[in-house]
Image (cartoon, rainbow, N blue to C red):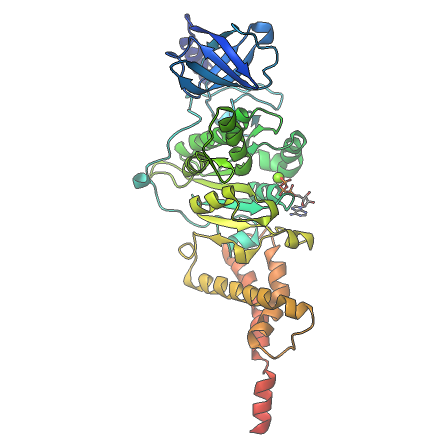
Length: 456
Ligand SMILES: Nc1ncnc2c1ncn2[C@@H]1O[C@H](COP(=O)(O)OP(=O)(O)OP(=O)(O)O)[C@@H](O)[C@H]1O
Ligand SMILES: [Mg+2]
């Protein structure tokens, strides 16, 4: 540890700048400030510091033209003067290391849990290119999650990227925390983007708890923070996940939520004057989301993998809403949570028929795939006949498929809430037992068969 501190100090000293170009504010409107004098020195995305020490504020370069820079302030622009000095901030070293595990940091790598944090020796960029597809492994084995539904019907494979789609208050965050506690991984990185401040503390202290935090790094930018900080939160979490992956560890990355990331991007783009809107979002939103999600996934031969789960807020369960639509195309599966299911108290409130894991059929054996198909068929038949069954219009015995679906509806519903199983084979045994109720009903003769028997 001492050598890490000295390495960090040596690097920080070597990066000290003795000469810094100074620009001047030439105009301001809202949080957008025009700056001259830094055009040759600033790059897009660089941080700037504006004003004198008492009133200093920071911002991000969002546009560069021959006439100067446009910088988006992190916070209100009240009190900015024409001619205020502007300097480029030294690039803050974002250098995760093992001491970050168990800690809560902001997107700049500063601790926000009240204890000092030693940065690592090797700074990383917040935005990087995804690994080239040719050096990546395929998705790995199925991960044990501690939740029966994910261990069987919706498997999560190592290096898979899944979306968790739901309306507000249907249980996205709670399910992510369950996965953080239960999934078999070396390190968990959790990006909380645009959550309410109270929720971050609740998530860390009560939902994750000491057991979940012992192998987690939480990166948080609450809803009151600037859009730049909220957008950086998803990049920072992914960058930390990449650090541990490069060290050969198996990483679970959870981002709650990508919708807030996209909204932060929209706010930044709108303030910077991007008018190329596509279904209410700037046209750069799709590429930004794809670039973020592509950074997760399987690593190369010498690396670990980043298995990632992104929560997506879908207003009114509209899966064609732009962000949901973009993500479904980018990810390797989607899990849909349903408000009606949550309202009848079944958690996790997964609508299995609308959820897909693209690690199937490869990550399950032929016998397991048969069980999965059987369970889906029964749930599908039950769902189509549910109105008839609930309203008493269905006469038992008139359709063997519906009879079988009714027989195993209860056991399957109970199975979908099961948690804490030890091995995948035991969980599949539970599923087999839940489905066995249908085979008992299939053995009962239908009224048609009884009539034919009597006539003969
Ligand atoms: N596994 C569970 N068991 C019991 N209740 C649950 C469970 N999951 C969610 N809930 C109930 O649903 C509420 C909302 O859950 P949660 O905060 O996880 O939803 P969310 O989708 O993340 O909401 P938001 O959109 O506001 O972020 C919880 O306060 C709790 O009452
Ligand atoms: Mg939530």
